[in-house]
Each structure stands twice: as C-alpha cells, then as structure tokens.
Length: 131
Image (tube, rainbow, N blue to C red):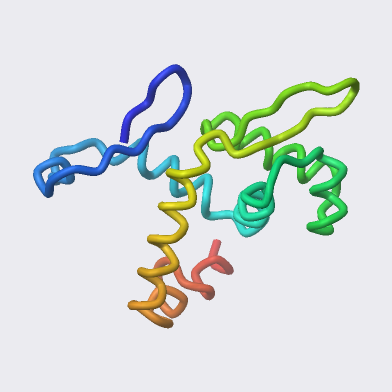
C-alpha cells in the first residue's frame, strides 16, 4: 500500500511485501473507508458511470448531506474524483480498475469463507451493535 500525492495506491507483490514488519496503517484506512455500506453502494453505483450527487441520492435513497459526506470520505481516500459542471459536481471512480479488482477479490474471498465473516464475534454483524 502506498500513498502518493494524497491518493492511495495498492501494490501487491511477494509474501515478503506482506511481512509482519510492514506498517498496516494505510491498509487499515483503506479498508475502513470501504467498511460502510453506503460508501460501498456509492462505489458500486459509480462503477456504472459518473453521477451527480443528486443522482446518487435518488438512486440510493440517501440524504444529500449523507451522500456528500460519504463522497468526501471517498475523495479524501483517493477512490473517487470530481469535476465541476455548472453548479454540479460530477463524481467518478478515480482508480476504477484497481477498485474493481479489489472488490472482485473480496467477493471471491467471501464466496470461500461463506458465513464465517458475518458470524465473526469481532467484526461480524453482531459486533457492529457493540459499544
């Protein structure tokens, strides 16, 4: 995982690159940004093409302020980018190929682990209800 000009880049290599000595902070931040269901829904919707905030709020049923806050998080993480057209901001995936590779890998991992992740006492469904 690398940080370059404020954007997060993922570099995968050998097992030596994933050693216990490597600082996991950037990876933790990346996965934390992907851990929110609304942010994942936004990313999946942006995978279909660029959208305005108003389009995302309509399609996803989220409040405008909620959508904007999630987009700001994703932009700060380098996952989405925006451009201004008139008075609107148009959002798009900043690293589409890499992000789709990561989400595809996550889906394959979930297919292999089944319900184990959801039932995990530390990070599963019940764990989100804990203080």
